[in-house]
Image (cartoon, rainbow, N blue to C red):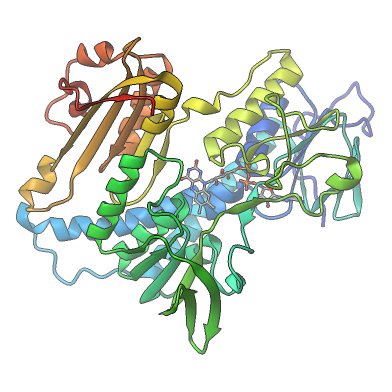
Length: 469
Ligand code: FAD
C-alpha cells in the first residue's frame, strides 16, 4: 500500500494537489541525500522507495560488509594477541550471533533514515515507481504523483550475464544474509566487492578461491599496489586464479561447480561479483526518451541532466563512480543548483576510496600509470615495512606506501597505501591532496610518533623516476 509517511511542512498557501517541486525515485544514498537537501532549500519533495530506506549502502552494502569485516578482523587480532601476553582459549565465531546483531543494527539505521526524511518534511511513498510522462510518476501503477522535476536514483544490482549459469551463484546480498559459513567459497570477479568478500570470508574461516580474467585483481587501481594486494591476499591464504577463462557455473547436488579452462572446481557456495548493472528497467525510460549510455547506465552530463528536460539522475544508476559519497555529492550538487541557483559539479577525479580487504588498500588521486600519461615526468616515493605491532608479534605482513609527485610542480598527484588503518589515514590525507599539497608540504609536516602514518611525511629518497612511456 502507498502510504505517505511524512509531510511535516504542509503548505498553507498552495492547494494540496499542487505538484511537488521534486520527486525522487529511490531511497538510497543519493536519493535520500538529494531529497533532504532539496527540502532544506524549501522545496516540496516526494520520495518513492520500493524496498527499505537506506538503499544498497545501509541495507546490503557498505555497512553490513564493514560489520562483517570487523568480525573477520577480530579473528586475526585474537590470533596476534598471544605474543602480547593474552591467552585466548577456544575462540569461536558464531555467524548466527553476528547475523542477529547485524539485523538489529540495520533496523536501527533504517529507522534513522526514516526519521531524517520525516523531520525534513519529505513525503515518502512505499512502492515501485515508474515514470508516466515528464511530470507524472506512478507508484505501483496506482498512485499518481505530479512533480515539476524528476530525479532518478535507483542504484544498481549484481550482473547476471557474465558467465552461463551464473544465476546459480550467490550475489553479495545473499552472502551478507548467510546462515552457515561455506567451507569452500568460490568468488567470480576481482573488483573491490569480490576481493573484500574473499578476504573477509577467508578471515572468518572459509577456504576461498578467486577467479578472474586479468593477471592482477582490482583493475583501475595503481598497478604496483594491485600486485602488492594480490601478494597480501595470497599470504592471508586466499587462492587467486588469475587469467581464468570462466566457462560456466552449475549446481550439482549440494555443490556449486565453476568450470574454468579445462577444470571443474567444486564449492559449497559461489559468489558472483562480476560487476553491477544500473537499475533502469521498468522505469518507463524508453517511452520518455531518456537516453542510456553503452553500459546501460542513464546518460547524464556534468549537471546530472538526462536527455529529457527536468529529468535528472544521480548515483549508481549513472555508473560514473559507484560509491556512496559520490552518489550523495552528485545529488546535493544537483539540488543546490536547482533550488539555490549555484553551479556546482562533482570532481570525480580526486575521490579517495578504500578496498576493505585485510589489509585494506586505500587510494587518493592518480595511479602511477595515469599520472605518467597526464604529467609526463614523475618522482615516485615508496616504502614497505613491517609495522611495529606486526613485528612484535612475529608476523610477516607488510605495510606499503607509494606517493606519486609531479616532478615539474612538486605537486602530490596520488597516494596509495596498503596496510591496517589505511582507509582512515587516506581520508585525512585526501584533504591535503585535494587542496593541492606539494611534496615539500609533506616534508615540512612534523610526524606523529610512533605511528604507521608518519612514514608519509618521512619519505625523503626518490625511489624511482618515471617518464611518459
Ligand atoms: P542505492 O543505494 O542502490 O539506492 C537505490 C534505491 O532505489 C534502492 O533502495 C532501491 O530499492 C530503490 N529503487 C530501485 N528501483 C526503484 C523503483 N522502480 N521504485 C522505487 N524504488 C526503487 N560504496 C562505498 O562508498 N563504500 C563501500 O565500502 C561500499 N561497499 C559496498 C559493498 C557492496 C556489497 C555493494 C553492493 C556496494 C557497496 N558500495 C560501497 C557502493 C554503494 O552502496 C553505492 O554506490 C550506493 O549505495 C549508491 O547509492 P544510490 O543512491 O545510487 O543507489
